[in-house]
Image (cartoon, rainbow, N blue to C red; front, side, top):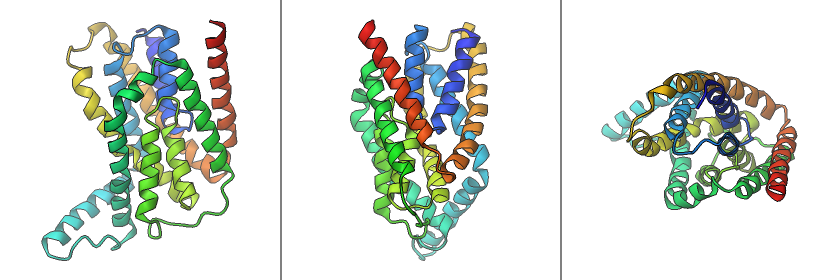
Amino acid sequence: MTYIQAIILGLAQGLAEFLPISSSGHLALLQYFFGVSSNNVLPFTVLMHLGTLLSVFIIYWTDIAALIKELIATIKDICTGKGLRINANPTRRLGFMIIVATIPTALIGLLFEDYFNSLYSSLVGISLGLIFTGIILLVAEKMGKQDKTIMTMKFRHAVFVGIMQGIAICPGVSRSGSTLFGSLLSGLDRATAVKFAFLISIPSILGSVILEAPDAFAQGMDAAIVGPVIAGVIVAALSGIFAIKAMIRIVTGRRLFGFSIYVWLVAATVLGYVLIS
């Protein structure tokens, strides 16, 4: 893997992880056309996930710090007999909603991991995932008024968003697009929806890293690609920061339709390639 390839892959990961265009689909397509085996770039993929995770921490560090503080307060309340006090404040309720949303995502990932992995080598499967992404973005764009906040959000809404995030394990289906769709369909206001969509990515990405890391680094990493890997991870982190900030503006401004057009064009191009090749 060259520096150019690593930088392009890092850019695709950082932008597509948070813009609703599917990082998994773009990385799978780039690896296919670069002729790079997925086994050869698995350590790189794991490290890029850490790069994008860093992006979320940088943008939402105040919220994350508040969630950690509230977790400690919750443990203290349990130990002193006060109970969970889920509705004590918005931060505590947000923490519980994140936990609830993560459960169905984890179950889907564990139960269907082999099936989803098999789709990464299918250009048709990736294209269908991109088409699905375009459809749910179009629906999200047309959503009417949403006014629910974390305090009025129900646990069933968190479960639904978690299911949508689990579906996004399929290559071509955007994680941010799916969770945003689920949040908006649940009635969350747009500012809350985008924050929730990005915060629930933390356990999802971290869990993915934990599961993939043993196999990824079991045989070590070729010293020749260490430089490109570092460059790609840095690019993934920086582009991830840009993508999160852009997504916040895009969602609140109701400008998702352009992404629908983009993923449909990519899908059409790939399907056209499949037909003529």
